[in-house]
Length: 178
Image (cartoon, rainbow, N blue to C red; front, side):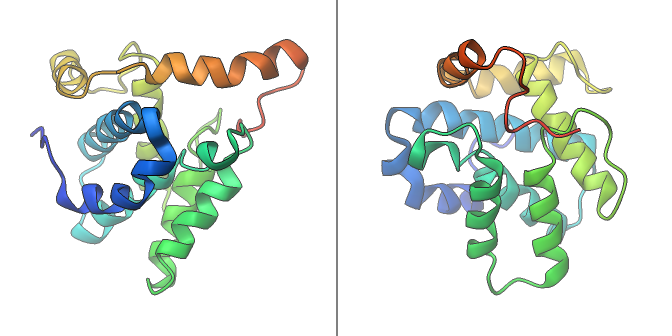
């Protein structure tokens, strides 16, 4: 399991978002790099699938920032699909599913299942700070986390989710999927 410190395709995807992300650029970029590495380690991908993971990775939470909203999966997915306007249907569907279901609380079954599940699990590995690893070696998770530090990403998520949780303590967060 190789750690790539820079993925040119991913950097190109991030480029238009640097200004919109502002101070959250590095924390989000590092989160995406961790997720991509975990996803590719969980599921060996073809080159086409790898490109889908990179696009889904870049866009999976991007909908948070334009309006600082927690109901960000539809806008994140829409932006990814805009980017993929010329891609084939299979690519678009896989990317859409990875984004829209990465906060699914139960295992996903359906088209592109292995890739969607690897992406969902990769996000959980990062969200849990590596406590959940889904078979990934502890050392590998630690190395990826060291290479791409948190830089306040989880703290920022708590800042965004905190007000919702205080106002709606009995309602699930709008990005969770059953």
